[in-house]
Length: 299
Image 1 (cartoon, one colour):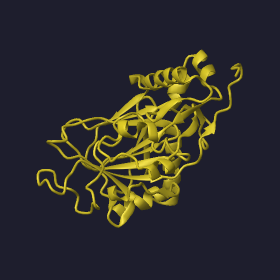
Image 2 (spheres, helix red, strand yellow; image 1 turned 135 degrees about the horizontal axis):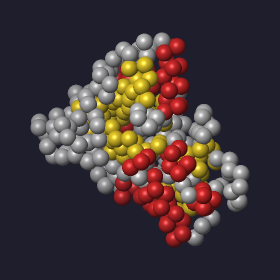
Image 3 (cartoon, helix red, strand yellow; image 1 turned 60 degrees about the vertical axis):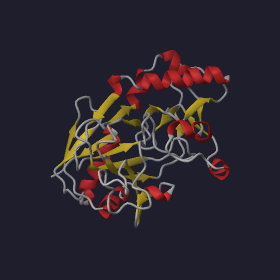
Image 4 (spheres, rainbow, N blue to C red; image 1 turned 90 degrees about the horizontal axis):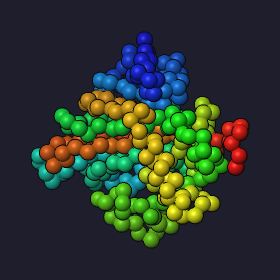
């Protein structure tokens, strides 16, 4: 029988009592989906998934997104994105046998963000599965962005009401992806700057979350320096320990998170000594919706 066991403060929950292959009935799936919308992140432990099973379970939540460039995806399974410091050339850090042209993207996600925030249509959710983890460190931090919004001072809620942040892959690619090649002119044309609401309404829950991440640069309608100060304030505010759950990975763990109301951040480890290999499937999303301005807050 499926059990949903909420974490201490209600942000996140463990899912127990299901198959290690995530094979669940329609009734069980509906219970899991409702728990995901309620708790924002779900953790599954002791899994033993093939790539096909990983894909099949994620697809029950909606259409899947294929990450690019494809060289970081599994051979034969483009829906599975590989995050790994393994190497096909280094026998001390062997790559997964089913890796494609590259073993995986190194040091991905080291910075608080939501997946796809720098795209016009960000990703709705992601399911990260731990294949191999170091014996120390290498954790992932998850942020409750509902709670962050609710805790904002009233004057800050007023400052962000009805406003959008500018997200720029062009401005920040070299900062966040130092191990990748610089963007080509064609890639820059394909990833123009986008604008998303700072107060985002969740399309399923109707709740408001603070929507801010590492790709945000400044704020539409504000002088650039003022916008940058506001972005920095919101980023730092959301990173307070009271909003954060720390996932300490074990092999076979998987976490499903909702990008529309959470942030996450990979933490470092000794990647010259240990291997960390994670497989991720990603859900397509929808354009972020501006939250309704609360009564009493003037624009």
